Structures are given as C-alpha cells and as structure tokens.
Image (cartoon, rainbow, N blue to C red; front, side):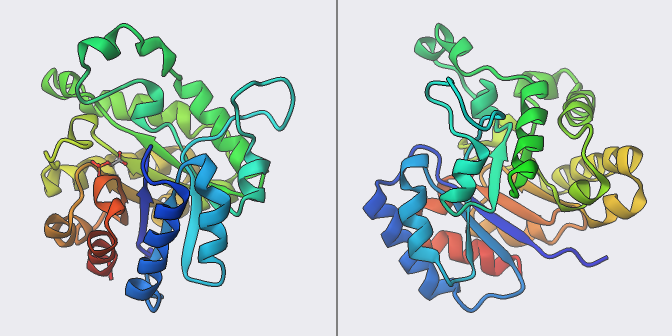
Length: 266
Ligand code: PGA
C-alpha cells in the first residue's frame, strides 16, 4: 500500500504567537500547493489557537505537543484533548522523549530536576487513547537512549515501549495512528541516525504493529523518523521503504528548511 508521507514540525518551546503566525504565513506561500504530503505544525499551547486561525483553509494542519488523558476537572496545568481539538488540533504528539524525561544529554542542572518530566509508557498509552476519544490522532513517539544503543538494547527498548504505548486501540484507530521513531541521541544533536538503521528500526516497529493488529494495519500505519532531520538528509531518509515521514524539531523553525523537507517527501 502506498502510504502518504507525513511531515510534522514540533516547535517545542519556541516562537511567540506573532512569530508562529509569521512562520505559517511563509509556509503557506512555500508549500501551499503540496497535496501529496500531509503537513502539520505543533506550536506551544498558547500559540495554538492563533496559529490555527492563520492556517485555516490551507493544507497545513495543527497539532499539540502533548495532552492530558482526563477531559476536565481539578488538574492544574493540564490541557484536555477536547481543548486541543477546540483550538483546531487534528494531531497531538504523545510520548516525546522530552516529556518522558529521556534526554540526549543531561546537564548537571537538569539531573537534579529530572523527575519533573517523567512519564511512563502507560501514561503515553492513556494519552493516545484520550486523543482518539476526542477526535484527534496521536503521533506516538518512541526511541532509545545512547547508552541503550551502545549496550545493544535498541530493539528490546523499542519493542517494549511499543507494546505498551500501542495497546488496546480499535483496529480503525490503529490504522490511523502515526508512530515516530526518534533515537534520543539524534534529537537536537545534529547526529542523524544512519538511514538504513533508521529504516531497520521503523521496520521492527511495523513488525510489532503486525503482531498486535495484523498485516493490513501494519501495511497502512505511517511511521516517521525524527532526530536531526535537515534539508540535506531528508531525501535519503524519506526514500527508505519503512520511513513514511518525519517529525522535525530544529529545522521546522525556519520556513525554507521545513519547506525543503516537505518537498523532499514528495
Ligand atoms: P530535532 O528534533 O529535529 O531538532 O532533532 C526532533 C524531535 O525532537 O522531534
């Protein structure tokens, strides 16, 4: 089955509201005519609604960077899936290594406050289910640390995460979900994963999906690679059979770079 490429930009904690609007206005000019690639931007929570207004009627879709799994109530600082949907989101990233508290490099200051970030595969799974229930589609991120890769544990880590993160969806939901393979050591470091190895791990993930949901779902599900995707490595990565798109951080903050990556997916 031909899977439609999907390029999503994770802005992380970058861009004011005005800067975000300016960025998507540039993107509308650069990639407004691209129909054969799905494109989404994931601004900060406070910029979602206004950036969402700016992309209305265009081919650029909106995503949140995280969600909570409850719908309302006494949950100070949390954002419900229905609130993201209300702001215009069709997508939401869950389980990014930065919300799991799994960073490529941990500085001394961060080490002492690491528990602030931690979430488990169970919460990632609850968030993904809540996203579906609210009418959005989750982009479910997974990835191994450098120490895990060096210890030869990559496959075991990825399979372990996926089995919990992806559990209990309906077949229809599983068909729609997007998975992002993001080796933690490649995020924001400029160290891109070798394209054959990225393709191999994405294939491994597809195999887990096949075991859990069957061959038809495994064939339909889109798996993105993320971690230092740039215009100069995008063609190579996106040309691989098991890589159906990219989750882009740093390069999604510049309209020309993000547009070049989208065009590389065509
Ligand atoms: P990067 O981030 O492209 O800056 O490496 C990717 C991500 O964290 O999604």
